[in-house]
Amino acid sequence: MESPKQQSTSQTNYSSWNDTGPATKHSYAPPSTLANSPSRSKRRAAEATEDYSLETDEERTRDHDEDIDDFDDEELATVHHKQRYAPLSTAFVIVQVIILPLMMWQCGVAPLEINPMIGPYPDALNYWGAKNAVLIIDDGELYRLITPIFLHAGLIHLAGNVLVQI
Image (cartoon, rainbow, N blue to C red; front, side):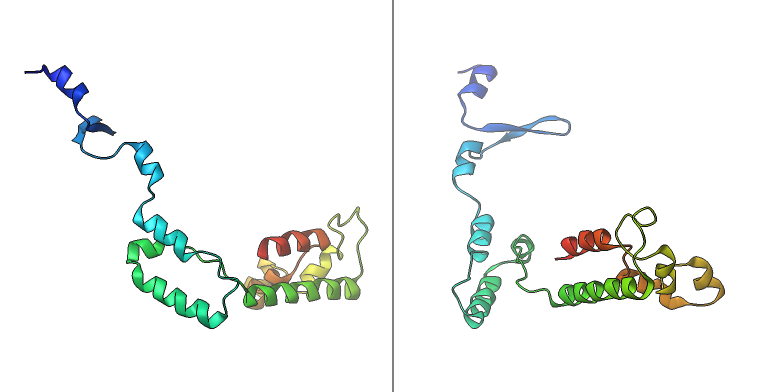
């Protein structure tokens, strides 16, 4: 009969570690074997997210619905789909791109010493509805909680936000 030390080295089981130290022996495949055979959910997720650029929208929708039915909730949470169009984001960008030139046309472009963002004078932002706590609280101008979303200090500020949004 083999000693316990010889027995543990001759077995094909692999031990694992947990927070308190070595765990009990488990019978599972070594990591190199797992790397060569992806799990069922990963394989199915990869198949579900293939590029469907040659298919029509109707075919893509039908195939997508069939793929979704094959997944359980846990697997479905791991599948990510990139949206092809972003109509709300695009509309939001268009509104922002229209407002800044209007501000600059109406209020003028400030010199770079005053506004290095290449935009209107700072008081133009307040005139167009920038956040001003005194006016919101004392005068009840609650619209100032929404309008700052569309305002930008200048072209550099607008370009940075638009690049992030698109």
